Image (cartoon, rainbow, N blue to C red):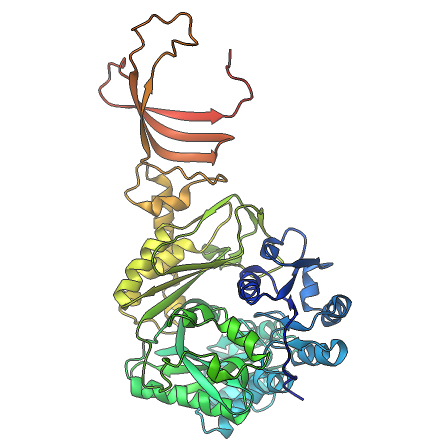
Amino acid sequence: MSQQPFRPIKRLLIANRGEIATRILSTARELNIETYTLYTTNDSSHTLNSTNSIQLPSPSSYLYISTLVSIVQKYNLDTIHPGYGFLSESAEFAERMWREANAVVIGPGFQILERTGDKLMARNLAQECHVPILPALQVPTGDVIQLQRFASEVSYPIIIKAVDGGGGRGIRIVTKEDELEGMLKAALRESPSKKVFAEKAAVDGYRHVEVQIIGDGKGGVRHLWERECSIQRRFQKVVEFAPCSVADRGAFAKIIESALRMARKVNYYSLGTFEFLARHSSSEFYFLEINPRLQVEHTVTESLASGIDLVKIQLLLAQGYPLSSLLLQSLPSSPLTPPQIHSLQLRITAESPSQNFSLSPGKISSFYFPSGNSVRVDTHLHPSTPAIIGTDFDSLLAKLIITAPTWQDIVAKAKRALDDTYIIGIETNLDLLRAIIDSDAFKKQECDTRWLVMNLPVFLRSAKKISEGLKNSAVPVSTSSLPTLPSSSSVVFRPRDAWNIELSLDESSNTNAKSGNSAPIPYHMQITRILSNNFPSSLKANILFNSPSSTNTKPTPYTLSLTSSSSTSTS
């Protein structure tokens, strides 16, 4: 049985962490569902507002099926939402939860997971549905000789893929034979089953596009448009947007129709993303894989039409609500009709782009995210909870989602939103995102799947200049100065903040003051650079100060240090 019986959700376990746990929790609260979240030492900010929270023995416990089954049994939980990553694509997890704990895992069910989560089986499904696929090995292997033979048949480049990889893991492009053995070993290390296959690599000029599908398990399926995610590094998405940049809508409609055909073939249930490579300049496209789960970038789709909540749709479908009652009737069903507005997501990560995107662990001392019309931020960071970034989990800190009527408006709004964002204490990819948004190719939507990789040195130099400019500018000209403000205070001071200060004697408490001689003395102070901001405990800044007694007409530069004191006087 692939689809468990419909029933009310009373106690929901969110078997994930970080921003996606926070995202699922918000919808569950709106549906008045009792929630249980999981956490580990120094990683609990996503549990805020949960009805109950349970500490796991270790970070790896998120992957231990037996541990999670025991938790569900102990607390008599009836439903689990796996989010993305971890066990979200595990057919074994879904089946064991049902058979051992009588609990439903939100998703397509274990039989559909078996067929769609395995990349080779998903390719076979595409072939059955007459969807174009690239030449590939038909069976998994770990043998370099087999891969050499395949490469000689189709010619390089080829791409090695773990059959059970996810989130860009277990994927390597091989451009020549002397790279093959090393790339194979790297892919095998990232495959849980230690199984890989290979296919001909389509690289130059291709866009990575995906179709959001939702099904009722009875053959009823709908598409919720597409997303493009061509801007990637190491096969992990950095920027996603909709509608896609493929100019010919008629050609792209064939991609959506292919996804619908495959979904109907397996009676797809719940959310799923069907991914393809498509040429911008022609109607050529190829099936890639199916992600049978909620995607990181589901927020792009939610922003395309008011009222779409994909997590809510998942939870209500699992309780027996008909699909027709969960989608706005105004949503067009024709693949030829594109979204009427644009949406863009930027992934903010704790990474050092200049160090091969290595994880940047440490403590976040301060952060600020943008707001304003059509700006959404999904994050688990919270001002009241210390944010310690370790090495046990992925690097995603926040998702910045922008919505606007046109692509030009998206670019302008994204630039402003990034300028308004800062994270202090660790390295992030913020400057790289700024460089991407500012590039001509991005503004013209000319970015294929190799664009970021091939131009990365240029972007790193640009990002370095942006970072140095922000740090060294004494009087910044815009809010792009914000990311350099060292602060753990909720009170934001900014360069160019200035005050007129008047000091006058308090005659009621100063016995030496003469009546009538207490005219205020004017001063002027302007902040040029924040050095540290822990206000009200302390504040240190470079300032320009003007005093009426000064003979110099120009303000004098000082370093201001404020430190809290329990005494009313330093004397």
